[in-house]
Length: 129
Image (cartoon, rainbow, N blue to C red; front, side):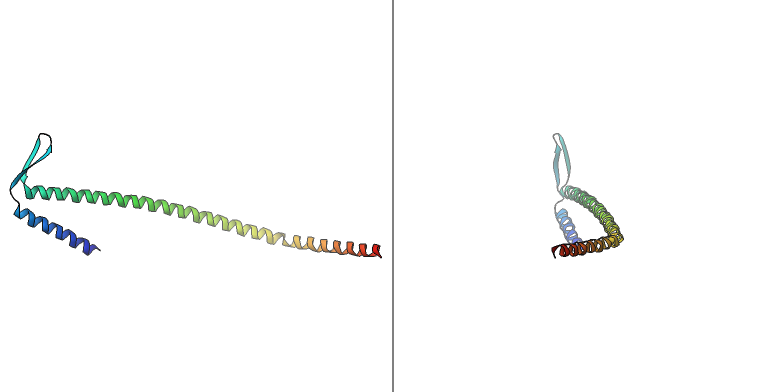
């Protein structure tokens, strides 16, 4: 891509040089009311091209700066989300540990309730007979 850019810039500069060599007659440019600049057309063209190149460079810097700021903001958001994911994963691990710690209590309560239910069924069957 750089070679292609260089090639286009080279062609533009070469065309500007050839055009400037052929156009050396003095011309007048009115910058503001009452201010006129007289110079050969080739000098004026080179100055105008240089100003255009500087403006294009400034625009590319501005665009690059905006992309960099947007990229930094996205990176910050990703880091915040990754941190939140880590916190949630830690919460999940803590909840799993709590459930595993309470599992024996649940199993004990389950067997107790089964024994109570069995006793009630026996008692109900005895009263029914």
